Image (cartoon, rainbow, N blue to C red; front, side, top):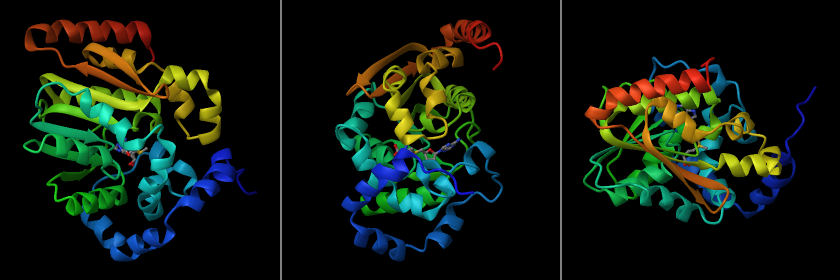
Length: 286
Ligand SMILES: C[S@@+](CC[C@H](N)C(=O)[O-])C[C@H]1O[C@@H](n2cnc3c(N)ncnc32)[C@H](O)[C@@H]1O
């Protein structure tokens, strides 16, 4: 029995495919030794969680673990992030306060937001982490072309290799709608651990309120965890993880930048207690 195609696969993807520069994509496939570069960037000790390896994200077989996903991601994303992809990404950069010196971009994918962060904060040490080695191959390729020095790390956003308080800014763009809510919450807890007190966590993703109103969007894309993401409340999840000063700004209605700060030491103990109480009240099962 063949699986039924989603509306995205059946109608939208073929239309967008008409606009893709296929010669450029074929050239990219040939110019890079994807298998060898993927192996080089892979962490051989990593096992992929089933929530990730079992899903054909974006209707592509093997999802982000396929070379095709990495090659086509940017070409397609420019048409599905409204009203204009770069402008939307810049809204995350504009939400950053002060000058962070150590920046981590979780679920960095092909590095489009990571590169913008490095361009905005050239003195900062910038790291992009992703679970797909091929997305990282593409990210590294783009960074080299732009002459940007960025460290790329293969790994799980919810369980990173760094010590606590290693970063001043942790970001994630378009990651959370691609993970089950329990994993999104675990990623926020990890971001909280990784941040220095006073550090910022900034998330750019779909507005959950708008996605709940416009169910046609979640129906069209039928991404595996998008409906579960839309049913949740990212600001509440951040508070549960211990963040304070949590707030959100809508970006062209459909997207949202959500921001929180790790409390300074005198408030940290209090915040951890509040987060603990909140998580008992709001999500006793998690
Ligand atoms: C929709 S893409 C977003 C990529 C990039 N941040 C952007 O803005 O274009 C989601 C990315 O999250 C990565 N990802 C999903 N779950 C992850 C996890 N648990 N840990 C690390 N990366 C993850 C995927 O491999 C994919 O590259």
